Image 1: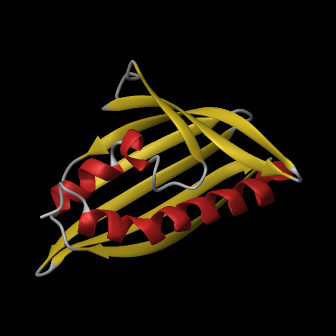
Image 2 (image 1 turned 90 degrees about the vertical axis):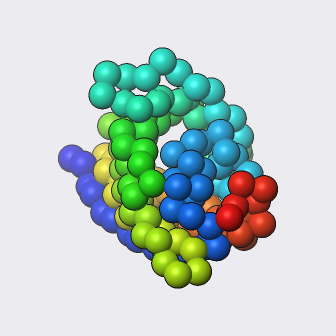
Length: 151
């Protein structure tokens, strides 16, 4: 049986929505931001996907650090919205819907993450996904504010 749960967060940065969307739609540019990602390889896009990637995370399981690789597909990549879906065996899916809104001093980034996983794995998977994405969020504004591509 699958369990499903969502969490959300908001980030504000001093750049345009288009610049933020470029970073959020490209996992290669997120390696420095995401606390679990250790490698990203671009793949041939799946039908209906804007881009596809093989992403390797390093997960802590007790004292061990285990690499796991999963596929992530960018389904929507515009200056207003970025939607990605990551799939990992067994039956674990992370859907990321990010909405970007221009504000007078930059951009407001609203993110909703929904994780679905088999019940025995759900608690661990949800905790890891939440910690990783909140870690990314804590670094995102500073990167966008200071980055060479930032407005």
